[in-house]
Image (tube, rainbow, N blue to C red; front, side, top):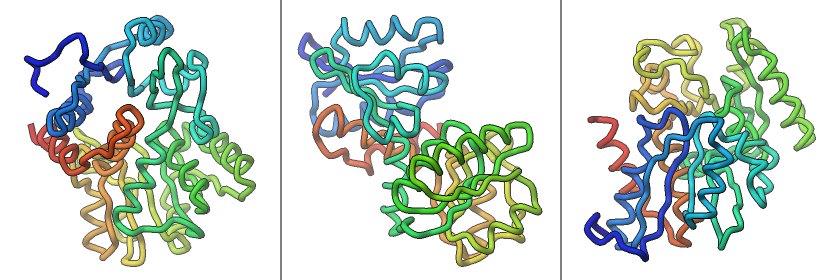
Length: 289
């Protein structure tokens, strides 16, 4: 589809958040709509916290087919929906909404997108010990996804927000009846936890542009028997991933989770399988620009 062919039959999808200017989702989704010849268009909407309910009412009134939900609305949007997918309910956050004739259902494709990114690299989390760094929105989705897939997470978070990690650990432990270790993100705890871990996940913002020279883990603690996943996707290869690769570890970049959460949202809205490679290429182009 080209912009010239937008008509009264065009289905609208989009993303709501604040801020929203940085989003790569329009580039990814519109590239796929064009490639598959679907009469859809994807746009970004800046929605402040005070306008969230009106925005969701507007989704119904304007028959918007689907929305992605980003910061700061992933939790706050839930009371305005008619139905919440079971995993999204456990996580307590929604990042994708489908409008089916006025009935709004919320999903969390951050969680399923993370698992798909692992599966693409033949990484099976079941039965594995996973060291998860962070306890914010991304960590929440990843932690529940891991437990749902049969892994055993240990959560480390910085001292100032240790209560977030404790709350997240308790929620995951209760939902899946598993022990979840929690501690402060500091070198001593990393030294204790890493030797027993199969997978390391960075879900903090450490290493994100403009602080690309930072890493949450000292290089000498990384080893070849780890799978290292970094949810940061800007820069494309973080310092953590470079140092993990140098240590012989298998690495997975944050762009994979971003692309897969988008691909799974696309499938929910259209019922079609997304050409993931096209989404990845479009996201990379935005990153490079």
